[in-house]
Image (tube, rainbow, N blue to C red; front, side):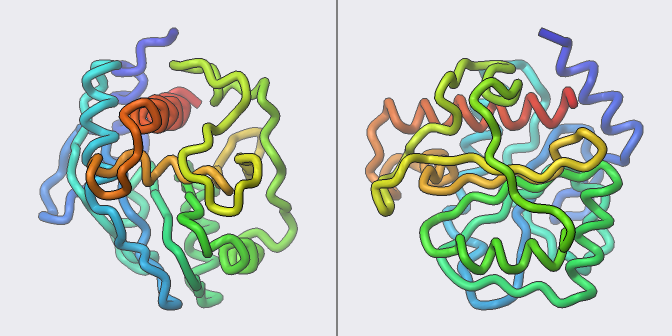
Length: 223
């Protein structure tokens, strides 16, 4: 596998370092929660990113910044965040200006991981059409490299929570061949990253979700 730490350094030099909520620059890789309007609980499970980034550092050696951080689409710091994480159980609303700004972010090297925490599927699909009116979410085939870059997921995204009992699915939007948005439905790996007592997931499920999250990070840093 490629030297992901070296690629991380290249990424940060080329696109600007991640800025923590304190405003202090850091060369470590961070995941930033996307704050959005509409009433959905975008802020839930703040331990998720902390645990994932701690795990990523332990198993890959990538220098990570394991803190809960968030950004509003209108914030100046948006474009210095290489990885946005979006989740929730309810409604989402993007203004036209926010949709244009999010598209600009994604067109210029940013990445968005959206995880349906049960209840955000319809509003997410509706609002992402404002961002990419000419693009459709397409299901990512199991052969795609994201599912094999660090840990093997031969059946694609794992099923962390039952929700409606449907098969888990991973969808994406590509721009010029690059995956800029990845969306998990009937899967919810983000809940598997949270502290064990939050959802009562088995350790096996939590480890599976953390390994999958590691694939996401490695894929973003190497593609």
